[in-house]
Length: 277
Image 1 (cartoon, one colour):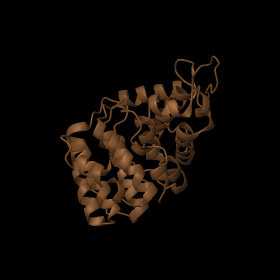
Image 2 (tube, rainbow, N blue to C red; image 1 turned 60 degrees about the vertical axis):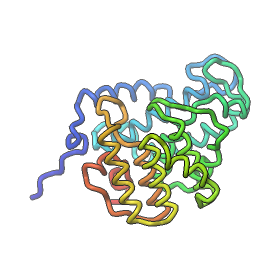
Image 3 (cartoon, one colour; image 1 turned 135 degrees about the vertical axis):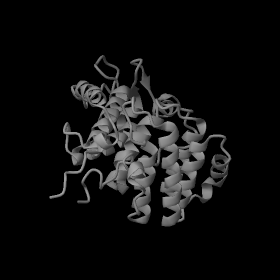
Image 4 (spheres, rainbow, N blue to C red; image 1 turned 90 degrees about the vertical axis):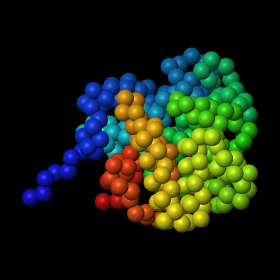
């Protein structure tokens, strides 16, 4: 009889202490899930913060499912559906017409574009949408990012070029092409930082529907992630952008030949969540 496969979290050397901290954090957040104050009023969470907290806690749940921990909180389908719908609501919901934000003051939809955080919620939501292969919500969400958005460094020290990567990605989804983004693509290819260069290389390969190039550029991207960005002491260990790019490639180009296991372990996929079994 074959020996049971080692759970992914053990294979990656994730500690029980890390797991316990994540579970405690999720338990706290789930107590107030879906509780938002969308007009001028006092409440536990204002419109923006409540939705941001819910997206992040559900990303943590999705990561637990990927890492094959026993604490699941929700099913995979429930988590993906909740995140996919919530991120569309975060950016496009009616509440933004008079958003009650962290200071309790109302904001118009245009003011939201200049002040409300967008990098982290966008990336967290795109994880769920691309893993779900949810074309409807992908197209809705990608109507939002454009160059008028303010620079948002998020929680993971994003750069202006990282912001631009997702503006280009959104345009690609809307237009099915990178033609109108050539100036931005060239700028990213000349970036002084490696991450945006590697990101745009993968996106170009997806736009060209070149599976061999997608795999080669994803290999470079994930090697850089493991070498430079990976930090097993933080809450999110998987590569958020790597997960988005891999699953977007599957949506646009079909199934891909997996990378080596030590790299795929940091990418949430349908397979890693048991959705294609």
